Picture 1 (cartoon, rainbow, N blue to C red):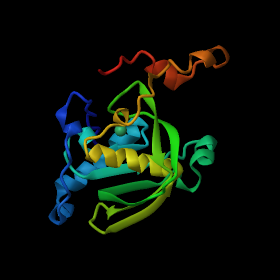
Picture 2: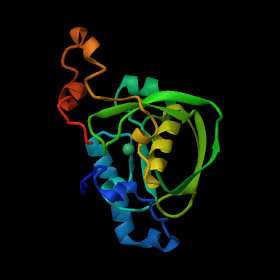
Picture 3: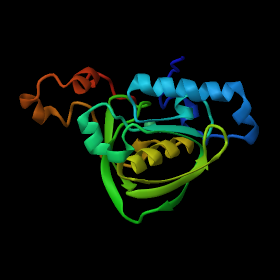
Picture 4: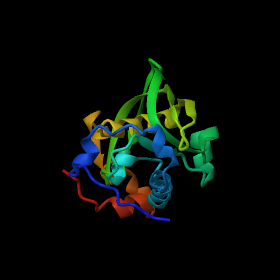
Amino acid sequence: MAILDIIQPDNPVLRKKAIRVDASQYQSEKFQQLVDDMLDTLAEAHGVGLAAPQVNQSTRLIIVHLPDESEEDREEYGDDAGKTYIVTNPKITKRSRRMVEGVEGCLSIPGILGEVDRHEMIVVTGQDRHGNDFRIKAKGWLARVFQHEIDHLNGQLFIDLTDKIWQVGEAEEADTADTTQDEPVASTAETPATD
Ligand code: NI
């Protein structure tokens, strides 16, 4: 088990177009280790998705995992809760015309949230960690996370897609009177903006 460092936007790898996973790589111990380490890193960070460029690897590999830790998770994510998707060379082959707004953050940009428009439904094709064909029709939050992670492979960050950006804590100020010690907000509120 290894936890990898998550890089921030001052590292140019995060802004590069990542390189395709070649068929020969699936057999390599190095590639399989990267997948395992990314799974560990995502779990440790309590994130919903991670793309290889975020751990300084310019490789077209993403992991998506919507949590299944509470009743709220299961309400929010339904059948998608608790599933882990490991996808190489992901490509969006279909997109709904309908867009939905939602709040996103990114492990590479701690302390910042933003409201981003995403396609409500997409179809993603690619390969799994062994090179077998992968295809999924994703809706709602799952579709959002796939779009966010695939953007990472093209050097794009969610802050490029919206001007509605705020620091964690700012928007919650109005609510703090009636919420006691919301841990995630309290612990990240001091995180400085990264630009
Ligand atoms: Ni991200």
